Image: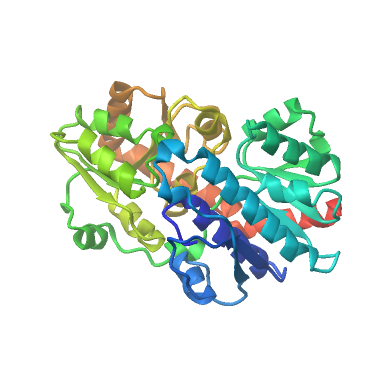
Length: 375
């Protein structure tokens, strides 16, 4: 932390919400060689964690040579990084009083702490690797509570034999303060150098292949007079997308943006898109996209892939669903929604009505109540 991946935003916001809910919280994260070390306050400011009750932050040593090899060869160094971080974090945790609750996203950490009271594991995907799966099952069998980020994760955990009463489903969320005091549509467009009156489709998020942003680019080939603005992603993914978008009129790719600029992009748009692919499982069944809840926070109408992971958190009153990986269908849905101001207004109202259930604070309160009951 910080990083160009959404997971660091999610971790910071979760920790901040626990602290605001009254739980004295310390966040442990891996110390990476290529990441500048920042003071806790600066790091929390970067991710829009509100002032007031805030978590402490400590970086923990790990074996870190992932970025010394090409992405195709990163499996082994990534595992070494995870396992070495887990070992160091566990040593830190074992020095704490036994009534301290441990909440982690790392199955390796949970496995090493199996049997410790007050252990909770948040799962974003069911691990396929045998070692990681064994660590998960060892922790659960020894009493750990499990938070599944989606219903798809919960279903696959059940297939592994994880008892249903050990699992709590909690999707991701958003921080209202990050989207308070939004600029007007005109102000946001002026700040971003966008046309004041053009129909604008925005995408703010990661560019991993399963997120389907290349499908949005292909849809843009079929859109006349529409500006498609894409912001986010790591450098290599941004470069690849720009190569794929060469010659496509109306597509602007801005690259990685600091998290605080999400509200500016969303305020500038008429519609946003979540074009996930139908494969792999993380896309179709596991993901709980931050971009969905951020669009919900500002009431920005959405066109999304018709997948279980998105049907879980959105209704047809809140978003237009289209077949995944179908650029023609995506373009048609965007044209229809951009042309229907009344429908967009209705979607906006439905999204804003649902938003309070999906704040990080509401999520943290539910989780703390559940953890108290589980303990």
